[in-house]
Length: 113
Image (cartoon, rainbow, N blue to C red):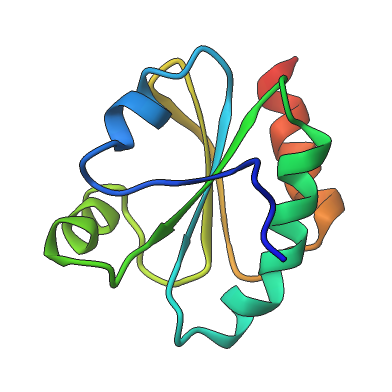
């Protein structure tokens, strides 16, 4: 079951939820047809719960619509899953592929430091 702490982001609310966030945001660019993305889902849910109140965790379905695809291109997504950490409106870290929880937690911890 998906965590209620994971924010579903689209092109329409990317700026308000991610770029204007007061706390760091881990963004998971994914698609429903992507096997590794599905495997990463439970890790994303765990991180959202673990960092609730300290950082945000968001998911963007890059195939949701054309504007979301364009957003992924603008952010430099070339392969999925692509995970990026934003802080103060800037991308501060990124990785591609289904990473383990420790790698992603470390990315968030660096942004919180």
